[in-house]
Length: 227
Image (cartoon, rainbow, N blue to C red; front, side):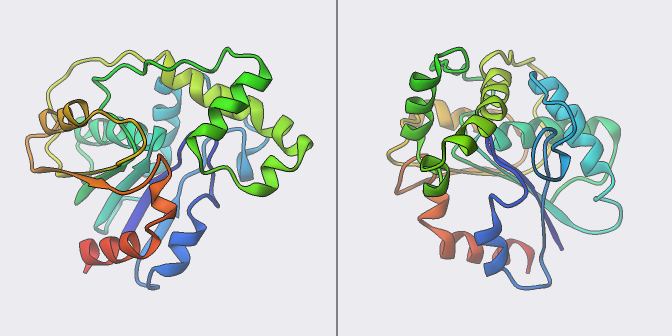
């Protein structure tokens, strides 16, 4: 059994290490890496969501041959995961058992807060307000300078994305959103129009990075999906 994970803006291979460590060995928890970070540090950054989805789809194709799997994405990763699911269906590949999305409005909802263009101080103020930034990054100017272009590229890709309306996917979707992250209940329920299959939407206590607050809950959730 396999969980294929799409990171949030600025995230990478180790962003979900806490969850991977809590899962039993029979679950292959595979976090994809976007260009320009981690093991792909020498690859040029991508500045459009279309490019990111194309790159992610190429990675997924190599991992979905002969076993059941789930696609999971947090924030930007949820959007990428949904768009990759559309590509999987269009290509006729083996479909995931489920798409799991956390902390992510549906692609039909335009992002209102635009920060990619802001001066450094304001940009980091907005990023910090989202939560989820490790203390070691906050304390190290060189690390912040290294991650800033990565984060700006990711936010630019989200902010400039225009959703192309197509038929819903035929994959069940579980959506979780934080009670304190400013996601509108009416808007998040638009996920229910994006799949012909069952879509479950659940509020969880916490801010945008509520996944770190509910590690045990989500580890048990994924075990339950794949048992």
